Amino acid sequence: HTDGGLEALEQLCKHLSIIFGRQHRTHVLSLYVYRDSARMLYVDRDVCVVSAPFCYTTDPDSKSDHTSLERHVLHRYLWRLAQMNNKQLGYDPTVTSATNDDFQAMFRFAVSSPGLTPYVREQLCHALCVDVTSPMATGYPIPTTDQWPLKRVARPNGTYVLIGRPKWASPSLFGRCTRGYVTYDQFKQEAYFMKDSWRVDHPAVKHEERRRGFLPAREYRPPTRQCIYSV
Figure 1: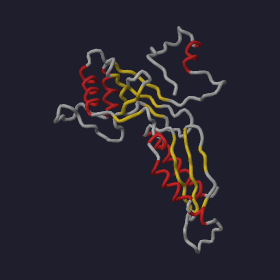
Figure 2: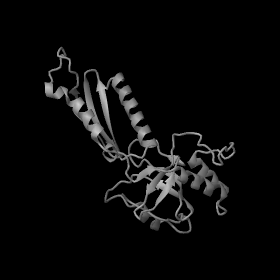
Figure 3: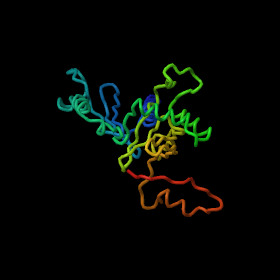
Figure 4: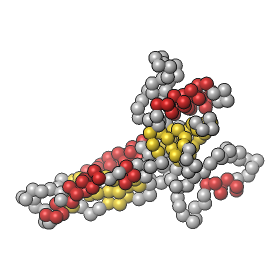
């Protein structure tokens, strides 16, 4: 609980929060190093598992009493990380990179679909990170940032929706970590709002879909639900 330890913990949590907020991850594997000792961390939306400290130095003059086998734990850890696939590293396998054709199709829909309101058009362009007022040399705008690349989110029926920059995202490192996206469905030519959250899986916590039935119809007008998936 020293000032240096709390500062290191704050920095570690900040980096993990950025990764979870910017990337589509199920978990993150991390490493904390202090002098000649290190700890391995497994962090997901629910827990953080921290290993016991181990000495990673190979300096024979080290004052640590760790054995030679323990000194090679870091080497084995990094080697095994290098052998892991994306799913093992924590990347969500249901989310893949979109193509340039996907980007162009979503932009065409955003600017030319007759059934969209100005607000929905604005939010689709926000998701694409484009400014439609900027010059378009190729007929399609260039994203103003590469921080939110367009992604495909697979659905159980074999189709997918396109998502980009979220409309809203929770800064929380743990818990529901809710993100809201304005998405585009190329197959139905529709725009949807998608809520992405890590709900609590506990018998005492009611599913959000069940709660809708307890709300007074005259006081609450729920949006039309198109689909709901629990992974």
